[in-house]
Structures are given as C-alpha cells and as structure tokens.
Length: 282
Image (tube, rainbow, N blue to C red; front, side, top):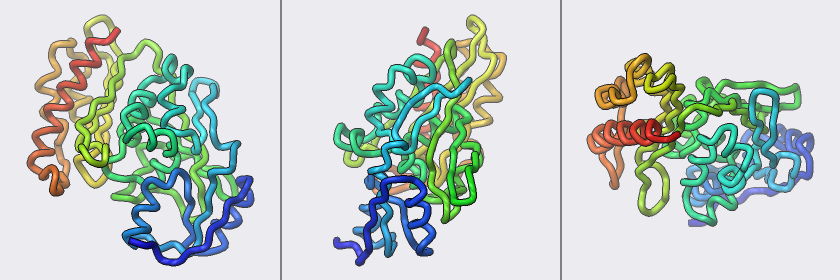
C-alpha cells in the first residue's frame, strides 16, 4: 500500500529536530523506520510530518558513563551486538540485539526507534526491563530520565510525551552475573513470539537475585516478578517450578501464527530453557 501524503525533514542537530517535532501535533520521529514505515503503508499511522534524525551523528555511540553504559538512541542493532564494551560489561543487551531480524534489519534499525515504537514482540523491551535500564528523553524544556519499568504503557504506547525524543539508554554493568536472551522467533518477521531475558546474581550454586524480562506474549513486555521471587535463595537446579509462574496474571495475545494458548504454554518452556542456559554459563 501507499502511505498518505507527508512532509519530510532531516535536521542535522537535536535542537532543530525538537523544534520540528513541536511544529505539528502529528509529527513523528523517523529513526531506522522498520516499524513506523510499514504502519504508514498500511495507514495505521498517518503523520503529516516525518522528522528523520538519522543524520544526527551525536546520537550514535556506546560509551562508559560511571557505573552504567550509555547507548545513543541512533546506535544500530549491529553496533550494539558487536560492541566489545557491552559484551564485556553488560552483555544482555548485545545478546538481544544479535537476535533481532536479519542482517539488513540489524544494520539499519536502531535501539531508540525500537523502544519508542514499543512493538509487543520487539526484543529490546525484555532486556531493558531485566536490566532496570534508564531511558533518557529530551524536549526543548530539558532532559527527563524514565525507568524502563515505567516506560512501556501499552501496545505501541510509551511514557514519551509528544514533544520528546528518546536520546539515550543507560544500562548497568553486570560483570560476574549470568545472563541470557532466548526467543522463539516468528519465521517471517523475526519478531519474538516469546522472548526471555535473564539476569542472575549467584553465590556459588545459590541464586541471590533474579531479573526476568518477557516480551511477545502480551500487549506489553513485563517483568516476571513471580518467577524472580520464586528463584531467590534457591539452588541452580530448582528453577523448573519457578518457570511455571512466568505467565502469572498475564493476558496473552494470539495471532494466526501462535494462539494465546500456545503462547501461554511456550512462555513456561522458554523461561525454563533460558534459565537453564543462563545457569550453565560461567
């Protein structure tokens, strides 16, 4: 299909982008475009102005920021997957990025665009939730830091205001902890039918703390707090029963590929396998 008519601007700096964003009520930010453009072609989204921030080079980076790693919103999935800093200091995000789409998508898609679009089957939401990441939003009035746990408000909906641009994601260092991202992907789109992000703090064979982020099974990614609670203080071999609580209080979504009932079954299986693999890593 063909999208509705729209104007296009490609500012060279963030200040100009923010001014353009506020110039119209229905203006939209264009990053990698892998989520927004298909929605426009289906006329599910009909902005009259696209503000392309792809030429703002200052928004693409991975660097140390105190006890966290800062990632610019325009950093591609490929750069996140290949970042030696992230692989060493906070590898969960790299693991998730390496499983997004295909080579073309990973080289064009960006972390900021993915998070701002809030697709219910996107990979990053599970990882940033498990990491308790911080998401930085910028408007003409200043900067706002949003906890990942407060960022996703619904299907394709976030805490970003209409006058804000997502500029940075900050994740903690997790050296010494065991991490894993495991997903069952849709064979056509590569989106997660179920995606499980695992972060475990261990003392020998004992689990001191656990963080589990889940995407793909509900309208919104979520922390599996019932699983986390069940795992604390347990030994590495006592995770099977905890995994059965991965869908507690969740309203499952269904589609032509996977019904709600199938997702409900699969999330338990995938959580158990993700935990098993995380615990086997050194």
